[in-house]
Length: 287
Length: 252
View 1: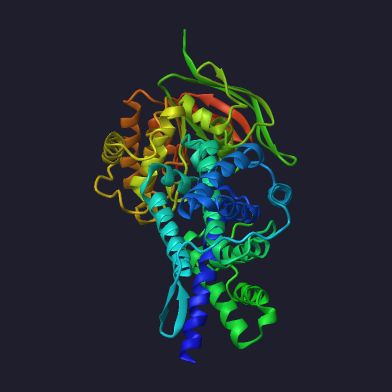
View 2: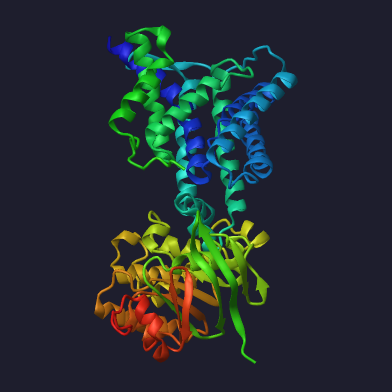
């Protein structure tokens, strides 16, 4: 029984760190640019494909490539789509993001075909902690997600660029009045968000199948998480990832496996009934 | 020849059917303090937002430093030398005082230079500390705006506008929330900015402050300019007294 619980917690941490990482990328971009970037699901998928296609170079070089390529894709989509739309109403941004998701999935289908790719684990073996067996690859996923979010915290807190990103997130008008360039902050923010989504996909590749729509449910869960956490709360998004992971893991083990994807949504509705502003208390932006 | 630093021509802005700013034309001279007074809802803040580029005008023209600016993006008006204060606690509420000043000051490094400086240089911190000292908040850089007194918040708001290096400073209700003794300190502080060679346009409710500070005063009511003159003449203007519901214009 104790081993079961430990195993469920281990599974939850692993799934939760992927959800959390993707949620952090969405929270950053939504918090600063107010773009509901659903297409990050496709960015994660392309990150996973980067690892699958470049598998002959080992694991770390493809992971680095996934991060760099997705940062570049982030710059492109910001420059070509979301920067021109920066004064557009929320519904337009929503449609643009959703359209981009479909276009990127279509491109993946054309380029890589409909078949599943799989990626061999970079690190073999595993260990047993409190009766839960955990592969090193899965431990790597959790560690990488936590390190990435810590790194993002340090960047936002201690660098000039990070501070200006936070400034735009707090007051777009105020930032403009003191002369901050919304274009520059937008490009950097989208690039970082996209790179994090790419990393989430790259981490997921060796422990899941890689195919064009692999991240669809994932991005929906990530959205649930940022609403749970309070829109724009970065650390709340990572924590929310773990909560959703736990909810799924224990729900599947003790209630019913068939409803695995429904548990987080049920939790989401429950929490919003009690705390409409989200767990972290930030007021959800309506506009 | 008088040198105009800012001029508006038939400047108007409506919200729905309501004209918040209605055909306002005026000019601000270099180095003067230009006061704007009027009852609540007279359109003063809207006028500031039109000049600073927070709102686009419905009609009319704005020129500053010889450039037509009424369609210029907000940040470019800042780069041109227009600073506007906002309530500091509303601006960047989760930035510390030091971070607020650093963020406000960082836009001076634009273009390639800005991209090449992702971290603060020693000179950036030095500049922040100098402004912190100038606004009388030395040693308080790690506090949040909400932890400051009203006077300190007003000074921070002004410091954040000043660190962008403006030639024209728009002060929005600097005496808001202040008690009488603080207003005197604020008055001395604003005069010390003037010494720096910065032209000031100021909106405020405190008539005594405005009479003391301003070289000329424009009175607005229901979006229109109803008087523009030196403080002494404004105080005795009948239209102005009517606009203030019969109160003597010299009282607070």
